[in-house]
Length: 284
Image (cartoon, rainbow, N blue to C red):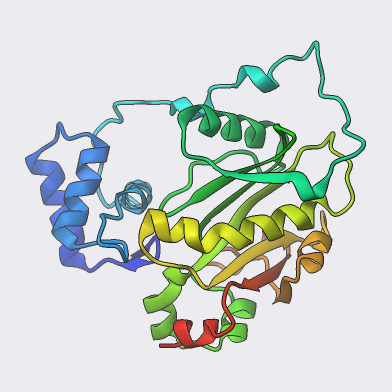
């Protein structure tokens, strides 16, 4: 059985059941860490993959494999609205001119910026805000101190034909090196901002520092970025302007479509190599 990109053998499922049965008062956070330690489920830097494990455990519970301990915190504090964007009496003003040369990109590291990022994305991104499992980075792009754009990067798709054919790796190589590909999971230019080339400039500035930021936090460097653009909403113009490559289109299935219903929107798959010899790293 496969969850969050990892194959779980039957004896591992039994191990998880035994941990739950022997210590029913464990928090889900502590449970996920114990499971990672028992199954040696770790990130490339040696840290426990406890966030991915918590997502996997929830999906196992949904599939009826076991029942998890009751959640001790029912609602994440990240969903709290932020006063900076919650003033309906004073809507944001359109910024007619932005000096692109003075844009600043800030890595989200502190709680106030984290709450601000979450609130903006929850309110203004068409996909909304969702907790991201696994390795991730979030950025705020500012013009003269004012937030104009927001981006996030997180775990890549387990497999997608256009990307995998572009890379040319085998299933074994993909499973071994998938962590070296990251996904631009959210990209938002705030709706009242009107500035030509702002989106491509924000992408370029963020991509330029992503490898170093990822290395500092997770002790390894990604070599390729991917993203998925819904064809019925966008044309991927800003990605093309930022020198990303469109490798093809999805089939509308998604990772949970076992019945081939193809109920999801068709998306274009865009890729951006972070180094020239990215294939050598991914096809080892």
